[in-house]
Length: 355
Ligand code: AOF
Ligand code: ZN
Image (cartoon, rainbow, N blue to C red; front, side, top):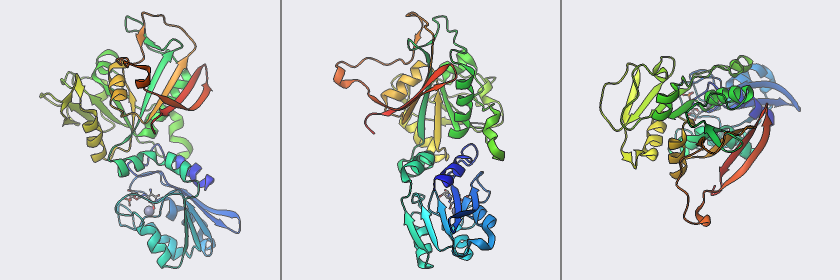
């Protein structure tokens, strides 16, 4: 199953909106087939692994990171392939919460006399499939907020100059995270100040021959101030413009009206609309205002903070715009998930303490 998880991770940059499932066929303690789902519309992990195993799949065990599907979607049901191959036992890390599957895959396998065991390395599989699971179970995408700051928690000089506080390793990783998330979200402040492209331009993303799908670009812009010439509107990916105002929409951009909330938009409504458009996971790369809004509205599932070994001084811009709590008990708390050195910088990954 650990190998199946590794294989699944290879599909992360291209399988959305499908989960990046990995699969291994084991015969007499030897791996005879491997597969992962690289791209929606292409074969699922199980038929690929079974095709590689060929006749050796008969009597073998199959390890898969998610319940084999039992429905006709863009591809035929995986359970049919598993049953036809004569597999003896299926180990699945997780059930598939997709209402089209939801236990139906396991039931079909058991009815065909195949032994089924669920739950092996479930925690790791939940991490691998977090976006898909979040959309299916919660009706909203998994949201990672990425921030980069100096040692004193500053993101830009007072004059706005900010490019390259962190080093090249952190920048390359952010590009990979964009592709793995499948969607990048930013605010109008960042569009006007930096005119970012929000594309993945890191070659290691198309790793090991796998497909790279350019991430959707999402702009939150209550007053519809984004110019038609902004680089985020360039072709090459889905583009979503969330706004509460009227006006012309650039070609190829989907404009989505959501209610205002405070000085911005209703962020819960934004996430619901994104899930409706099959967005599994979002990487938020934004300025302090939207970052503060996301944190205040408890939309952030994970915080990734790149910390550079430099000081920008007390006049530089802060990490987030967030009114302080009235008492220490009310402060927003986080738990460390990992703390690692990345090139010249530190990479800190945190999760809300309430989870
Ligand atoms: C599997 N193995 O490798 C994946 C599964 O439209 P389709 O045919 O591609 O089906 C998509 C659904 O299949 C997706 O929503 C999820 O429930 C499941 N994904 N299932 O057996 C796989 N990627
Ligand atoms: Zn399938």
